[in-house]
Length: 147
Image 1 (cartoon, one colour):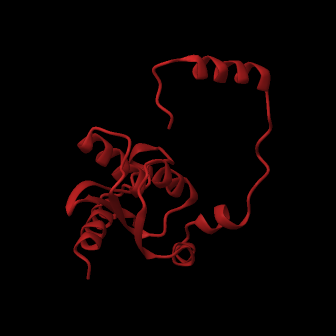
Image 2 (cartoon, rainbow, N blue to C red):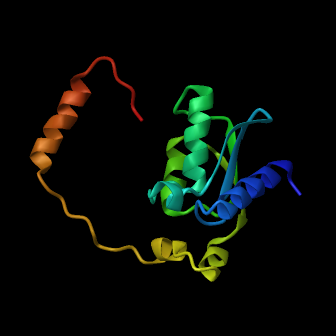
């Protein structure tokens, strides 16, 4: 078994035995060193965004002092949901290793599959001209970071 996946499993076990949330643990590694780790804390924090991957990404960013995790690899006990996958992409993590797949998480009562297979029409454009003005203000700034 992979050493980093062992750590992800330990994280997940800690979380489920403390009642923090589901069996999802994650580790982020850069140059052979663990720079971030975390587990699902949705229940503990009353926050639906506190998935293991999100928690580990926040920890890695804090450890490295950057929002750019280029060169990092992520190890997680389950295939990332769309929210976590988006965060992984925004963080520039290029390699993800996962244990269980979406069908496995569905099999234990999680609804990740729903977010992959049934997009819902919940969005509507509103006040675009005012928001475009904000974008123009941003574009005019000389000291900015695109992310």
